[in-house]
Image (tube, rainbow, N blue to C red; front, side):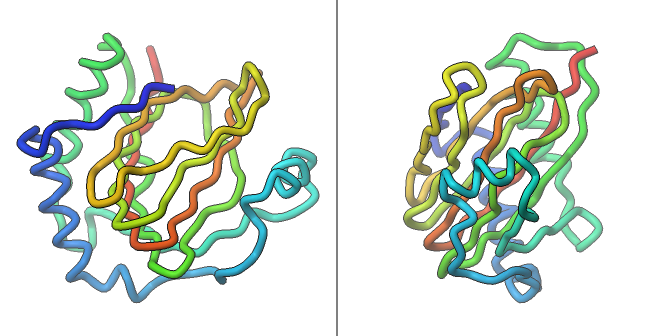
Length: 183
């Protein structure tokens, strides 16, 4: 996994900040689904999810371009950043997630995604993390978001050796993600 931050004057940061302001004034915060307070993020739950014994759970809301915001600038600058960081230029692009995690325990439990590279841009106002099980070492790693800043992660999903992951936000967290399927 590649983790990094960008300077505040980077074009992607400027675009994401505009999007964040729109999200805060939209009805997205009012559409949170799921319940706080369970143990969906524990390593025990990871083992159960890997054995398909329990359903995935979450407390969050999703939003998209049809709700009144044009994500073209965010996507354009995210694609340029992905190409810069990975060197990959031949891929199919699929926007996969625009998510609002509410204050007071927003999360998505352990899950895996479809094959391909992912770029996630995450803004957190306080304590927030992306937790994952390293596909090679099998170690569970907690990657903390930088409070009050945008954090960026690029990682790959492989069907043979999937990367299980989960997200938690004690305070507000917003994320935007893109899937890159190499051609």
